[in-house]
Amino acid sequence: MNLSPLAADDFHRYERRRLKAAIALVTVWAFTALLHLVVWGQWLVYGLVLVTGVHLVRVLRRVPQVTPEALPSWQDTPPSERTAAYLSQWPTVSILVAAKNEVQVIQRLVKSLTAIDYPATRFDIWLIDDNSTDGTGLLMDQLAQNQENLHVIHRDETATGGKSGALNQVWPTTPGSILLVFDADAQIPPDCLRRAVPLFQQEQVGAVQLRKAIANGTQNFWTRGQVAEMAFDAYCQLKRNALGGIGELRGNGQFVRRTALEQCGGWNEETITDDLDLTLKLHVNGWDVPLMMTPAVREEGVTQAIALWHQRNRWAEGGYQRYLDYWRLLTPRRLGWGKTLDLALFWMIQYGLPTAALPDLVLAIARQRPPMLVPLSSAAAIFATVGMAQGLRRSQSASLFSVLVQTVRGMIYMTHWLVVVATVTTRMAIRPKRLKWVKTQHGDVDDPTVIEASVSSQS
Image (tube, rainbow, N blue to C red; front, side):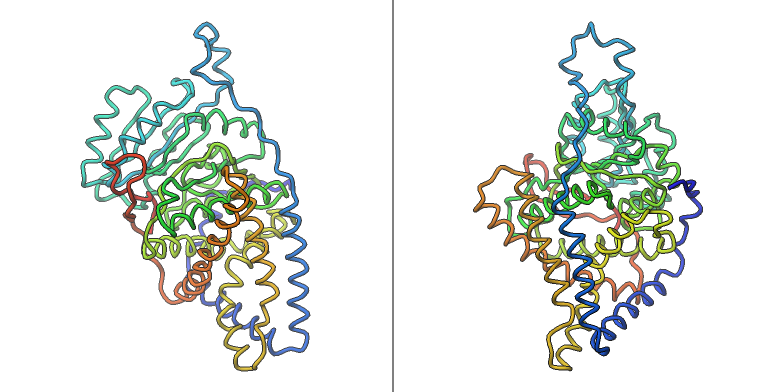
């Protein structure tokens, strides 16, 4: 594509979200009713199954791209070799952490950030205290006293925009050619920078996402389910990228090229999922977003059903919201045919089918016949099962029997997504969600002093 990048103002399409959601909901329900009422409805479903099935098989069979060789270990580099010319191969990186009331975990995070295996003169750390009331800001100041590349920014009670607002206040003043965002509860591998930054040697790469892993994954059913969910998500993204499809950011452990972020106008302060919103803006501007399986950034999974419900509601609404905001831009002219097809089919699987499930079931009962969308849902379920099993095998050392057990449990766990999306798409047509910071309770993982941590995002 030879299209010029869109300006930041071209993305400001946040008006009438409720109306757009209502139109989308009515359209999906009306299309589902049409399938039941016309004689060729079942054949149309079979056609969708064929197109979707072929694409999903291609995704599963695609060989992932080879990851560029990591930069050498800086800690193992002899002092005699640390010349200015040698340093020039290390891109500058600015690490951003927006935090609110994170006194329990911020010291652990800073310890891991300052221990990153990367030249200290080539990366800097920016801690953003978003009007914390628990002593987080004071602790940040204390931690920064003996660290030359550690900076602390304080926001007062008048600051707006949540996590996106905090990041936008700071990133334009940072020196890094690459920006890296972590959540406050992140557990960071020391080699993450030197393994990820070589991907930016590819000119079309606008951002890179580290695979996310669950630190407390053995705690209970819900965290075990999140382990399987994250493994499937990473594997699916890896294969979609290899096929020329859509790669997505996941907030925690996201690298972004500065010039790409500038084109997109920074992070969107009018969304509840800044990472998913930025994903589409990057792709519309012609950038790719690959994922790295290794190393992974670990984070604490939610441990209770009610916390999972609220978190997944936010994820579902934010993911759906971006399609309503940018639907005019999601065309082959801007994305290319490969990304457009991939985006459309995965939208149908993630949002279309769950939204259509209720009217499909009601009409099936009324007409005393099976639901029309069962073949399409079955194809999606088979893909998810195979992809989850493969993702678990790639992300952990486990026996085949263990992978099988985890996959079955993970698929049972994933049924919550059907209910979440069905209710979210309906609620969005009735009332919007208010932007605010959210405090998510976490369990004790590796440090007995860790009692709770914020997901450092908006709700």
